[in-house]
Length: 287
Image (cartoon, rainbow, N blue to C red):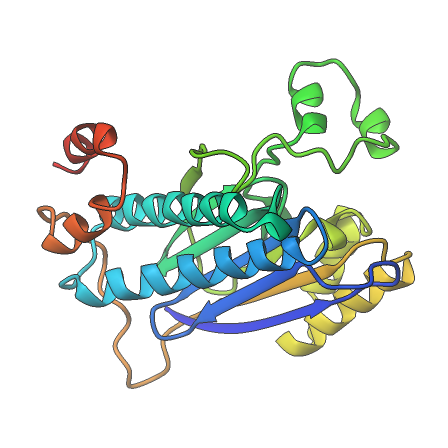
């Protein structure tokens, strides 16, 4: 598979500073988007820490592993990297008074051949556009989504709720965090759309699909999405990260398929950063 990347982040029409952050590494096909929160500039710090640390840690880990990659190793590594970023943000907030209470949502992906390993915490989203349809691959960790899941409100009530920005999970607000990690099969022609709620709250799903599925170049799609969100009010920072999936260029071999393999020493470096009480359970999962 071949991947093309593009991102755009914008202040919006209301906020005085941008607390979103995006990181892409095209060599290892790792990409991360975060939406920070809490205090003056503290949200910027949390989002930047999350995107930078997760991206850098995954780059180092992937570089040390022999190929072909094993999907369960990639999945475990991504989960650990997000957990480590959570601990770093939590510790920074405790040590720096100006950062007290900071946190951030996060959505992060790793592409391995025709597989996407996707992790998320909070309400930043990842969509997949395929054959003219839009599918949301992440499920919001939010109070509103919980109300919908329990049947306490309808989708129509949720659309006009004033509690849309209440997240039930975020990085940095507690010593530990539950990271949701899933795997998704990709096809040539798929488009991945990652975004902060500054985009998803401003545009309906059919509007997102129409703009993302247009014939415009990738940069043009990103710009059009941001402009549309601003046109609807731009009430929050707006960030979008697009990944176009296509066949490997002619004359260049496609990425090898994922294959099972034994735990690699690179896992030890990541696992050493976790609390000791979690090591045994994690090693059992990897074996």
